[in-house]
Length: 249
Image 1: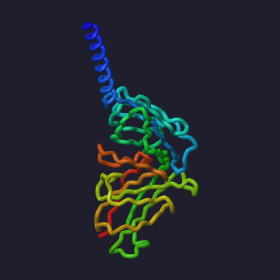
Image 2 (image 1 turned 90 degrees about the vertical axis):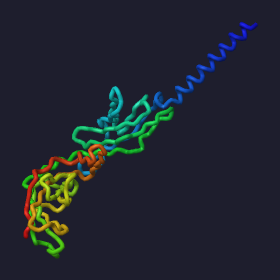
Image 3 (image 1 turned 135 degrees about the vertical axis):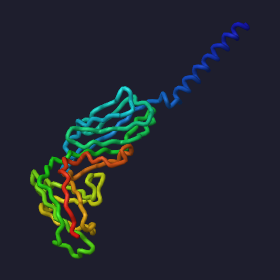
Image 4 (image 1 turned 180 degrees about the vertical axis):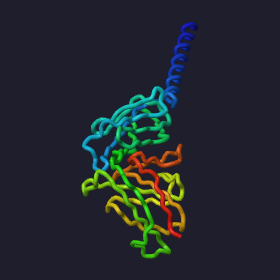
């Protein structure tokens, strides 16, 4: 009788141990997994949605091995069995801008998780810019003490049309290292055609200024990179060389 009771107690103790071990494993975030899904929409460089959105590669950085998948024609993507954790999601496609989502916290669980950030990707601008120049002019300047008027000249190809506008953006700085992320003035042109006269707040007199111009798509979706501490404008096309001009005394 005593042996029978002892055997029963051992069985009960073993069952309790297994129960709590399983419960601990289920509640352990390190062992939790789940499914993640989301959607990407693609646009041409003129801002029109494309008829289908396949071919976008979605990569989850921070996984080992690295997890990758491709969007279907509707732009949908999914990952199964993703461990709970913090990840960077990268969206890429040839001739399209890159998009990144940083430090996404994935919890996981039995209910699939929808990434509520809808990702938009634009085609990179195919516009080519030639013979870019900039100079100071008094033309259309209502007050030379308050404003500086600059004349911007360029050639762009292909030529813009009403259905397919060609937007350009010039960046102006007193630094030779002028760029998208290092400028004092930003000027959007291309809607009127060259030459264009732009009124700016008064520039410094007798000063060398440097400028660079980029072709940009109608719909661009830049993102901030916290590691580089700057915005990413991968939707922009190839820039011009840096040009310079001097303001009058």
